Length: 527
Image (tube, rainbow, N blue to C red):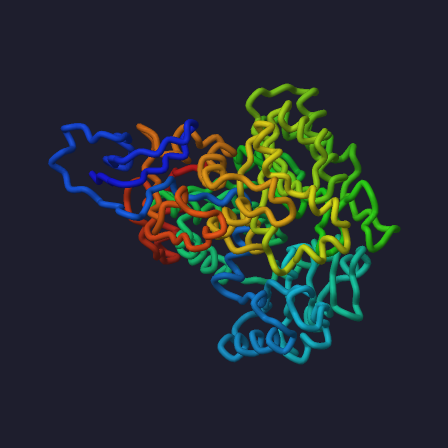
């Protein structure tokens, strides 16, 4: 039994803040302002200037992708010029000679002095002997060296967006090209990366993730491995994983008995702003002949949504531009007309540009939105660039968090890692300090709920997790300060001091043998 005394921020429906919380055998035994007499002889955990909140979640991330970059390979987003990118690569190669393929992340033409992407020729100088790719910060384009380009079959070379001269891959060529590259990653490397990544993400105070998987590994190996390791993590320390299968083949999810389907890649309806292939209703300001790309015809998206909805699956789809967002919402609307379901929890991911009419449809139909506030403050895709390609008015109208919440739409937060770091505090800062339109900022309390209760709600977990209420599982985080007493501009001063899952302090570390014993041969299910 543990008794916490201080600022207990419950994130419940009434936004209660209490003085005491009692944890007993992994559950919340009491929460309130007066400590009942039966607990009076137990020692207190005094929070003082600190606070206790529900454990954070991450409502949308590419877990196995991020795991490879965070735990095995490298990230170049801090580099300020191309020579610095080269040094990161060569330093990595000096210490690592064993990999069959190297996959780095975070290159952006906006954050380097040269104001352009690195080229194949430059990558060849830094890494001439091993197939290598640098994925762009937006997760929708990349640059490959000659060793990797030479391996690509003709079917990939013929796809839209394949540029042999520069080594840069966009659109369908990117999707297929990255799938091909990740298929070269060894199973052992992937397993070790995922195991380590759970420990890394727990340092952010996260106790639940919604990973989207299936990026080209043979036989969807990433889906299998994340499932096994997730079960092991649940068994070891109650870490929760709710996996989304990125496929439009409904039977794939059903065969694995997964209750949810979607995400990005195969269920991305458009591209992104970084590659200027997000699907727009009106042309890009800097290219009046370009409205971006819709990867699927309306009838194909409708067919998928109808089949998945009739199968009882929860659907998520990636949309960035307003044309793609309309397509996704329209398809879900048609699916719900075809087979009405009251509590489906279908969700649109990103929804960076969304019309007021489509917001109202989401509210009416019960469609949730999982948005990435970290996008708003990323130096890798600055406001000046967005205004250049979209115009000031569309930028101002993008990511309308305030409107979403005011309409009663369930709004949850995700990092889209590796696109942004899986740090909920950074996401809270972005949500509370909207850089495009301050009137679209949310309150600190709302930002907390976007990262706790709403993530649990999205996957039907709100009865057990996401808020600090009597009888719920004691997934808790101690913060160094009380966020509700802070100026929103100071939120980056918040720090996670301790994560508790089912009332126990999170303990890192797991071997491959331990993972197999706990994950492969036990019955814990992904809910």
